[in-house]
Image (cartoon, rainbow, N blue to C red; front, side, top):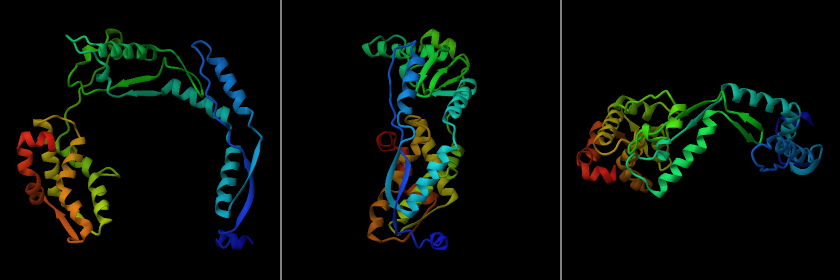
Length: 286
């Protein structure tokens, strides 16, 4: 029997297994200052389902997975894991706030939306200063959590934030724009790099796509040029450039007219050079 199980001869058989019933998550909202009572109520409701089991009829491979997960869950002390996680996040946690410039109030302007932006900043202020935040895993103290905020600040500047928030974010770092060399690395090095994505996409239609090094370099240079002349949107420009470069190929590839294509510098120039030099066209197309 065990030999048949190991060889997979029983995979098509269905059996009944008894596994622990999943715990139902209960969300309880309470006013500030009652976090401890909220946690106690949440634990009480979650423990009501503990010890209950359910019977399921599944195939043998699925039963093996369910029983393995069930036994592994019994080896984990959830309370100990929760306590350790809270300690770590309170002592070495990092919170990254992206696009902080979207809540900055531009100097010299005062509109209805600016009032709500300032309200968001004031809501963030106690978190950055240090306060107790109620979560589903317990109360988190933010006194020793590192807060990092970033923003493009095209239409505003860091000094447009309220003074109290500026004082809680004292270290400012200005990043340089991405160079052509940076864009080349972005095109090639990530696991899901754009050149790999487009190669795999067109390979599904029977087209073998090969990017030469000078072709990748030329794509990066055109993306950098358009960023400098039109608007600097960083690596996002590579998506629009690649889409425009391979638009026609992707359209005709399912017809099977071409089985291989080499994307070199000459091919990139033939498709994008004139378009990239026309600022009006590149503003709306690239």
